[in-house]
Length: 132
Image (tube, rainbow, N blue to C red):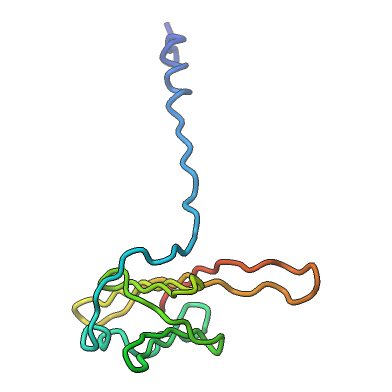
């Protein structure tokens, strides 16, 4: 018996242990549960955030409503779905903002970007962008 010899049943078992895990699908689900956030809570998130693609995400409050805007792509009314995650009511934007104890900010933005306006152009796409 050589050092590299394995019984046939062991070889088969090794081959059967391969597991394929599909990549997670990016999507923005309609908010089914809302997290109550008063003006003071939202105040910690208001302002501008530089994104890794060079654009700026702005969160602001107008009256009792919260809004998000990326660049000049238009305002999206948002609701909190957790203490640090917001989803646009039109399902075009979802943002998670992580602020650590030192005040450093991280997070992720998912947003729907329009496709080409030329006839037969590309459909809308979901873009994932990190914070800088």
